[in-house]
Length: 114
Image 1 (tube, rainbow, N blue to C red):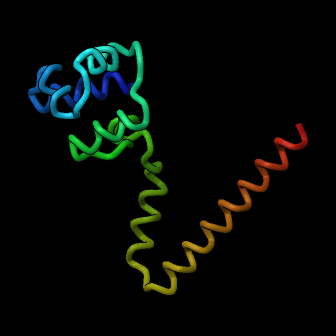
Image 2 (image 1 turned 45 degrees about the vertical axis):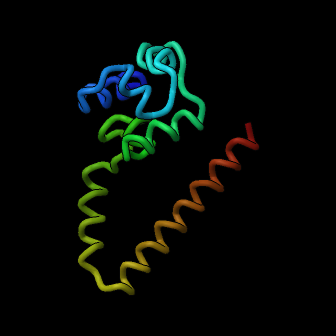
Image 3 (image 1 turned 90 degrees about the horizontal axis):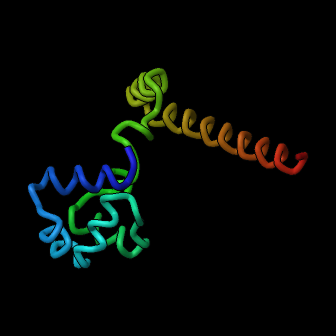
């Protein structure tokens, strides 16, 4: 789902008209209308006004519900890690951070080689 659809869903879930939403977030109703139709997108300041007024995160507005969730196998692995003692949790976190650095380095080298 795109930003415009998420914004429309958010407004309707709160039973607000476009005028009411505009007043709540401190924008002109024309802005809300153009956002919901996908003609334009808000500036960072506009986005901040929306998420602050509704008490949501930017992720909730910009991404689909599970778009940024880890896959099920990772969720299960992370769940298992929560049962570990603090030292083992730290070891797992260090391993993940090391693998992320390795991936970033490999990506940079691949870009430079291209």
